[in-house]
Length: 373
Ligand code: GMT
Image 1 (tube, rainbow, N blue to C red):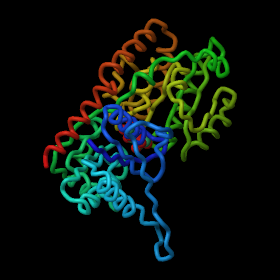
Image 2 (cartoon, rainbow, N blue to C red; image 1 turned 90 degrees about the vertical axis):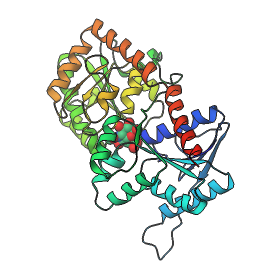
Image 3 (cartoon, rainbow, N blue to C red; image 1 turned 30 degrees about the vertical axis):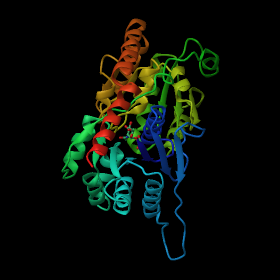
Image 4 (cartoon, helix red, strand yellow; image 1 turned 120 degrees about the horizontal axis):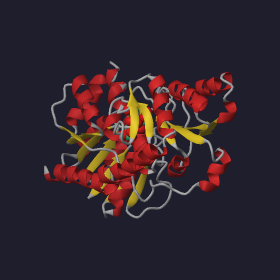
């Protein structure tokens, strides 16, 4: 098949999933065309069967805002015509699903549109009256719509008047990349052998509740010698830095900023903290599980579909930092329990969320929409 992919190319779960899926499809012999405003950060080098088409939104004096959505729709249509695309798979509903709909109007019915909903496109933007109708339209006009968890499907159906089936396809990990890695060389630089490492990775947006990460760590380190590593950047980053200063914990907290080698960082950790307020899936919890690292966090959204509470991690009510800290201490101080959690997590990641299994599911969706014509 000839597949177009549009996603947000910056660091972030939806872009990661879109890029890794594109690479898998290319490995399977499909021609894959990324149509984005920047090179997706996980692409960056040559891959057989993968093409990259940049979207440029020009600035003109008469425009207050550059017309990015129209430029994207036009680029999608151009690429679809020149490369005879069978379908465009858009990740994140706005504006991508609407741009793909426009492109389809320019190209004709033969171009199919598959939309994957990732989370904040529904749970945050779906509540915004200035976008709600467009999001709903984009979803209803797509030839197929997938969502990354059952929880996200329920939320989409509650928020919008959806006229078509939403198919759940979980996110995935490539087991060749996400596995426990030997990082004994770098671990020494971050912690003493007797200390535990707690890790948080996110875009530091308010929904990640980074303050809860800090509060959980503050309680844990009183009971267990430990360090906290924070990876990523975003609006709440400076709040977290200030908090560490105020609590006198600067020497125990490392801010690493944006990093690409997530599997190595996860392998460095003993525990992932993810106390989010909203999380349609929680890709980082899956990546951690695949590297042998349990998660302690909240039971928001789709997280319970990824982390099995009491088996591969512990999930508490949003904001219950007391319980999260107790669970973290319980896990980190009981070697046998920790070993069981790690093993159950590795097995679950391999069996339920393997790249090959999920790529099969997307391939079936592609085939169905293409055969519809
Ligand atoms: O977590 C974010 O804020 C980034 C966001 C994105 O669009 O990249 O992540 C969403 O999509 C990921 C991939 O499907 C999911 O794993 C995240 O749970 C989801 N984030 C939220 O729902 C807040």
